[in-house]
Length: 337
Image (tube, rainbow, N blue to C red; front, side, top):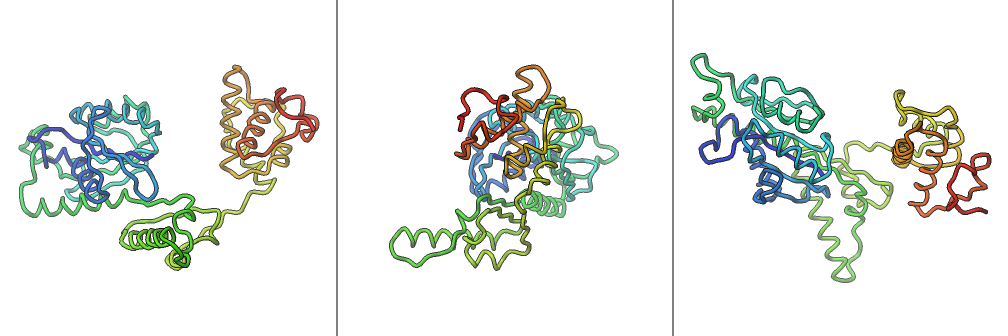
C-alpha cells in the first residue's frame, strides 16, 4: 500500500492558493488514475484504487495546514504503512515559482505543517516533493502570501505545468510477480483466452502511454509475452544467493547494534537453509522478536526456530536430526526423522 498525501487548507476560500499546492497535485493524480477523493477518513478526504498492481490511497488532509500531522499519522496507522510508503506534496516559498525539489527524507524547515507531521509520526523519513510557489514580496505578510492566489496568467500557466510534473514525478509503476499479468498471449480457443489476450494488450498500451519509469519483477521471465520483453530497456538478473552470500546477508540483517549472542553459527544457518534474501530478512526479524519476547539476546535457538518457521511457510519440513548438534534447540513440535 502506498499513500500520496497533498498538504493544504480545506474550504473554498483557500482553493487554488499557494499553500494548497499539495491539493492541486492530488487533484491531478485523481484525474489521471480515475480515483475520486471523496471518502471522509483519518481527518482527511481519501480515495483508494490500484495503480500498476499496487494499492494506493490519495489523501487531502482536512485539518488545516498546521495540523497536517493528525491526518498523516492517522492514515499511516489505518493503512499500517511506514514513512517510506508515504509520498507527501507541499508548497515551498523558498523555491522559485514553478520548480520542484524531490527528497527521500528531511526535516521540517520553517514549515509548520511539516513540523506537525514529524512530531505526530515520530519520523522524518518521508519521501517528499516540494513545489516552489515563489518567495514572499517585501511588502507582503507571510500568512497573507501563502493563502494568496497566483497573480498573473504567466504564473498560473507555470504552476499548472509544475503540478503536472509533480504528479508525474510520483508515478513509478511497479509490477511484482509480473508474469501473472504479462504472460504470453495464447491462441484463442474460448472467451477466457480472448479476455486474457485483451487484458495483456490493454496493459501494453498503458505502459506505452506512461511517461515515467516502469519496473517489472518476476522469477519466471520465460513466461513473459515477447511484446513486453522487446520494450525493456534494462534487464537485471539477481542470482539466487549461494551459501557464502547467505551467510553475509544474515550477518548484515543483524546490525552491529543488535544484541547477538556468541553462540550464533552463521555458517551453519547459511549452509542448512538455502533461502532467498527476502526469506532471510523474515528470519532475522522473527528471531529478533522472539529474543525481545524473552528479554535476552538474539541467540542460535531464535534463528533456528525462525528459519524452521520460514521453511514451514513454504511447505518444507525440517527434520530435527538434520540440524545435527543444534537439534535440541528446537521446540518439541518439530518432527523427528
